[in-house]
Length: 214
Length: 214
Image (cartoon, rainbow over all chains, first blue to last red; front, top):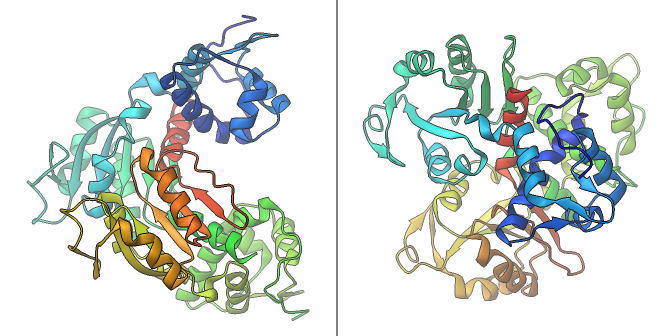
């Protein structure tokens, strides 16, 4: 093995960053299939990019490959996981315990990626106190205090559009650094260190419609 | 106005295609805000790409702008909608009426994009016959016949991973051309004219974790 990665990313380009979750996903599948090594050629087929692109990508964060041997899947998985923060054990709360919030809380989305779901909050008195995915839904009024006390890393926002920005700002003030936003709007929070991922499910449907139309 | 688009796309690059749903989304918001025109400069700020990129993008499918005036929002919205197939009235069924299928069926995802949801199918006898989002859930055994008879365009797959590929192939044989796949796997269907969009919600969470970690 030429050199092992440090889990530190020097300057990874946005294009490579975008591919990292896919690498991680495929490598997880290969591990489950009890595979040990993979060539850049095979990986390139799965990823649908060229083999030289694969080599370039993986060089970005230290080489894990050996010429003529290929990549050690488990090691690559661990190193990419480090870069993606999987072992950091980021904590998350869901704000908005409606249909989508409930569905997400019951999915395997968090645990598979090393994110620890800690609770759900809602504004609706009919929902507050009910149990979802093993959590008692808490009054949204208590969300900021909770996040301060528990140093929560991520808030998942499954709220009506109008409520998203004020709630996000409140939680950013409470120290939350990551926002995974499902309200169909472009959430922006101007606060140092705060990161937002806006999840636009409908864009994927529209791309499919484009493909069907052309 | 220099020239109106035809709704036909000559050769739109994948990068532009990826931006189209976002254009459409922002233009919808501008219309709701009762705006009539917009400059490439303002649009570039909203889209977070350069103004010259905006002009290039919009030139790809015919110019809708006039120098010094900007773009006519409504017209641009209509033309991009045509390219995205919004007025085609694509029909869709959801296969898998569990938590996610139910949530999606109750969301505004389809109607906003001109897609007409026609029904839900499931394999579970406890769910078959129950009403979700105004539809009676139908036995999955009847899905293929339904899609043949009704010339269904799109199948939304909210199924366990293992069941996704066989169901997708069955429906592709029944003439379904578009697959919006939510099972966390890379669905590929080798059939002429069949298009797949794999929705990987978790990739967005991982990108957020990367951002927090770096």
